[in-house]
Image 1: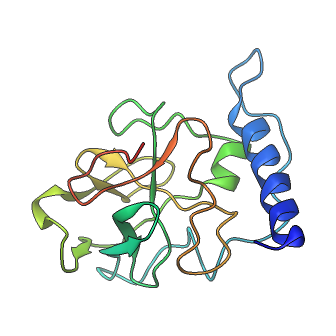
Image 2: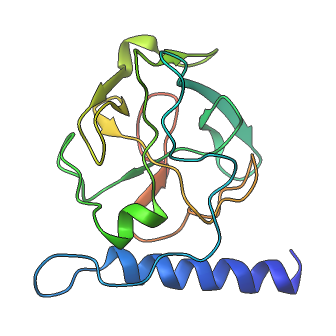
Length: 162
């Protein structure tokens, strides 16, 4: 990892940790990450086209990604399909949403896929967990959100990868 990349990850991680913390009123208070998420992360996908797939990573093993290979995460503080990620947190952790029923690629149990009204209506769920992107993941295959408190990549069974 280059020094520039390490510094970028540390800056993004600091912003995310601050944004996902809460102030006295429960609202996130930090500014958003200045870099945009990778290619349309968090934008509503065309009707019915949100696809969840399985990818392999030498460190994480098999984990969920979208059709472009962007890592999907769950937030441990969510209560089922009620999001705990609002304000600045939602800017750094945009939801994956679908206008229709999400589909599963190889290795994904389609019975575990669904949608709920999380940050946005029709946020994609897997095994009852709302799914999110991380704004610090700039390219397919990035896993920069791994290791941040309360955020986890998701295995094909729908569990957090510790």
